[in-house]
Length: 481
Image: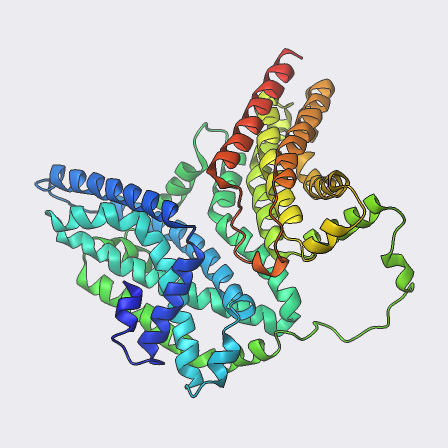
């Protein structure tokens, strides 16, 4: 569909370049015909569900008020945080990983057109991701009796445009202030914290409240008690989502104006960051300690240190690990809430084993598959099992700080239970990690920018079931301790 539209547009035009960016986004999210067929079937069923709701609600009148506007406001805040996270990651890929900027900036094209197309591509990719989840339900309901709900589409466009501007702006600001290399790492950290910001806010509210309510409900009540969503600027998202023409015009017009201003204002910053992409973040310094420290005695130590260093240098892994820590933190806080000891050690044991198993699986896959010298290792006079063992332990060592978080909380109630959890956590990581390194298909590390874990659905499912069963076993043992 995108290719068909591109063939009917002037090559090099803004619309043509934007469609090219969207095609690249869809290809990066691909995964073969089977995945596309499954996705199409799921989308078809999802649309059928929307038609069902549209038929049921066709004759039901909608009377939106302050309560509905507040619900839309909270949903818009949540969507915006996820959109900003995706825009941050997409901006980093565009600036540092896409590999097409040399060709584009050397072509007879206006740099403003290129930057605008990149920004439109980021916004379009963000909107496409969330449209897949929202529009199959929303559009049938709107078209079958409630056309005012089409205002939600305008709200979605406004959020996507604003998130794209914010994501690219923050990426460029980081590159300008701390340097391109450090900006990639800081950008991953910021993306993880942005995506989890609402979750953290609700959990903080829940930690300081004695009532047994969810953090989301506490956030809802806090905003309603202060009058948010009932009027003024905070009421614009809700009014726009329910078809208020003035609110739609203000939101969409403001977002498009911000988008145009960002495309104009970020042009020079984008060019500067792109040209500095290979620069060092600090001045060259004389190496200390000599070159001997980079060499180690023995095969195991050499491979282990090399793989661990490569994993630690990967900015994308920081995003994955930090997200897991962020979502584990509220669970760990249960151990210290109200000064009481931990009341749910078996649940935490189960959680620790499952999460650590999945993390080690991803790290082991990257350590074993992202290999720049597979041919050299094949002809080396060493056993493959020794290489796999060193790679597996490197992955487990990187996951170890995360794997000990929940056992620390369990130790407040039962030290034997904490030790059992550590054993099962290490066992789950070792088993699923071994499956990854034993069946790895090595390829150059530079081809792993998409970070789509391989192995097929069957092996991924087997690894998850193994971690699940070991987690259940750990929970049962801790319960009887």
